[in-house]
Amino acid sequence: MLAPAVLAAPISACTTWLSMPLLQRYALARPNARSSHKIPTPQGGGIAVVAATLLVAGALVSISLPLIGSAVLIALVGLVDDIRPLPVWLRLLLQAGAVAFIVFTAPEALRIVPALPPAVERTLILIAGIWFVNLVNFMDGLDLMTVVEVVPVTAALGLFGWFGDLSLSTTLLATALCGAMLGFAPFNKPVAKVFLGDVGSLPIGLLLGWCLLELAWHGQPIAALLLPAYYLADSTITLFRRIIRREQFWSAHRSHFYQRATDNGFTVSRVTGEVFALNLVLAALALVTVRAGSTTITLLALVAGAIAVAFVLRRFSRPQAS
Image 1 (cartoon, rainbow, N blue to C red):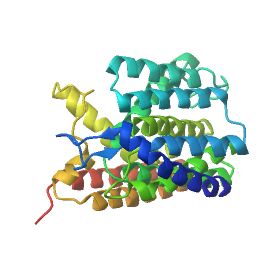
Image 2: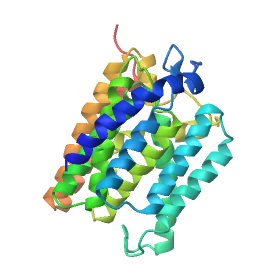
Image 3: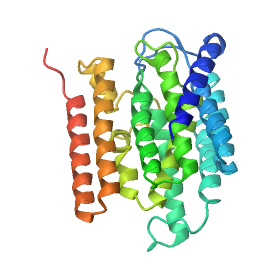
């Protein structure tokens, strides 16, 4: 199970290094009032991550064509948007088409809540998929943030596959993504030399969301919810707050908890360090729910995960004592 990570890491690192001069010229992210960086920084390093993931996983096991096609489409949309911003409606339309292609071509026998009509369940999965793709993009606003989110989640998915709780193809895809993110990490650590960009964060959200959906389809919906719980909570709470305040919630902003943390005196390294530690806790809780096979333990793990996420969100939202 380690082979995909071992292969993807150097491919991702080398491709990132080779692409940086081109990104410096054509895809430079300049600081603005909403940015967390202070100097112009190339974006688009996610090309290397996505390419390494699909190349390695595709070489080792058969990956569904809808998933590959949708990931490539979303990456191309992100690449164009990194260079010349697209209208919001067009981005969402293309993203919805890509996610729908995956969701509605999956075998009908795959269910999460059998009591729901299949069409209703797939529609809800479609909405959740579009949101997950975008929330990964929204949360990619700090050096190393997506790395400290994706690596623990994909490593946990690799463990689930080793235990037989996830299909071989999804397990290899997750571990390849884990390795690709590790290969990208040295270039993205504070102060970042390159950002993922939309070309990276959007398809990474799609691939990660697919892996979590597969976990839910394999009878582990609580584990699939626990693993990305911090990203889900930060982005969803922030979205509803902006809607309630009648703000243009689709526009760029600095309202996420992790962004407020840096405004409240947290260093970038401290924010990402705490998120990484939280994700390790969430991964451990998810593992407990999968291996315990007890409804009571599963509910307790879910409550514990919610408390842990709430604790970190509260810390990030409060100014640090000087």
